[in-house]
Length: 52
Ligand SMILES: [Zn+2]
Image (cartoon, rainbow, N blue to C red):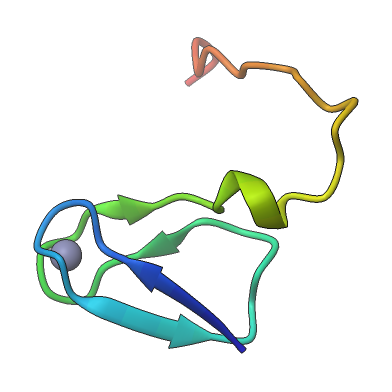
């Protein structure tokens, strides 16, 4: 179980899904995966999100 704080509204969320970003149920903000829990130091790829 992982705890994350919503960057939008500050609500604390808990989920067992620690691999993917979450979506805040209150404000709809994306709650990203915390860097210290990402666990892959070689994966420094910044996705520019240009392919939509
Ligand atoms: Zn929120």
